[in-house]
Image (cartoon, rainbow, N blue to C red; front, top):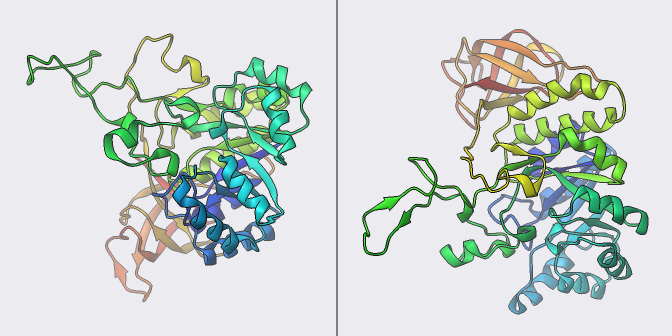
Length: 400
């Protein structure tokens, strides 16, 4: 059973791998559905593949945007530019993109995106005949449907297990393009469903009415976040092969922490230790930025009883350790301001079910020249002396 983690850049990819991802999915500079993510240059793609393969992990490269007629020549040129890279698989949504891969003799495993909303075994058979090796089922596919589909197909089945949900059917939304001209199906979603809306009566233009009893906004379009942790064993029993985490544009800390939770959960599924560790996993998933969680796309609004869906953020991602070896003075990359006296908590990869998370106090901070400074600023690399030795691969957070 595989955990598939997101990577919006090379830095996130490395921590996804170190924190337990079996595969990492990522995009290049064109033709994927996250154009606002930094994504990967050709040079970074080569580094990503090398790093993943050194750690016996796999890379899935995304070509999952939908092609307009005018984009076909550019798409073909882009395919030729990445053709020789040693990806383990490519992911597509558009049959046209699949046709271009075949035309240019790209001999890789091909995965089909959830954007194609596959809901039945007949559709699976059709895509298998087209050369598809793995299918990410539509997010609308129920657990009962998966149990019926699995015995009838040989393809690998993948589902999303965690992260943001799109209010549109299988993510194919026109709202962003309608309101802003930014096309979600070409990777440029403005997340218009997350905006704040009010209701006005046409003859009373200045009289804004709340649809729900909320003084700030209405959120009839804004979905909860998916979290299948508690139902993971049931999906495994149903025959799912791969579990995908959403979030290429989310933080390195989010990627690492969610990945390690689901990796350990998969490892312990079906054992008595699953329930033992469940409270720890739930606590950790609550300590990444998220909206209220739902276990089922169809019940996210409690049978149409609309509730407020706030963005929950309980910790700040402070930075991570760069240097190797266990010592109290470490090379540190900051993502939020760090001050002497700060009490930070570090998380680590979970190996052999050992939780190494620990609290550390910042004693002193130095710049790279060795001068003592009063603050580590975001994006700054510095030396930090803690009150105790810090093991490798530490990611630091601070409670808000």
